[in-house]
Image 1 (cartoon, rainbow, N blue to C red):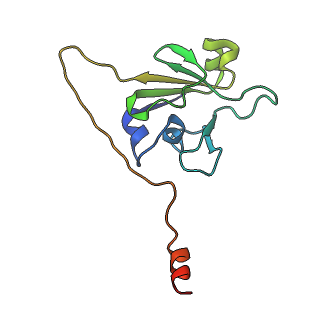
Image 2 (image 1 turned 120 degrees about the vertical axis):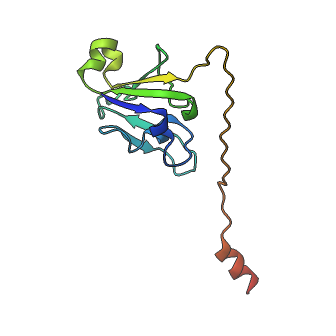
Length: 139
């Protein structure tokens, strides 16, 4: 079992999903990017590839509710994350936990307290190639 806090997940730069936040932070968790495009989809494997025809994605449990689509949650909304990668996952969640379980606890509001947090990031997906521009202008 591995546990990560919200500070550990967002440390090291801007991330857009849970997969990018987990990359390199928990042993035994393999995160791969499926496409070369920036912001492309990622896949998470906790216990390797167990099935040829079925899904190898882990089970996500967000605030006690099991789901198969937990990778698109905002990492800034996560308070803590626990990763079950051994027999304890199947003992608790049965066959659904055969590929591992990622338990996500989100941040919650507190009564009589106001808290506003802003996190912003700007980037480009199509950088300008200065070499093409320079070659075209010198011909």
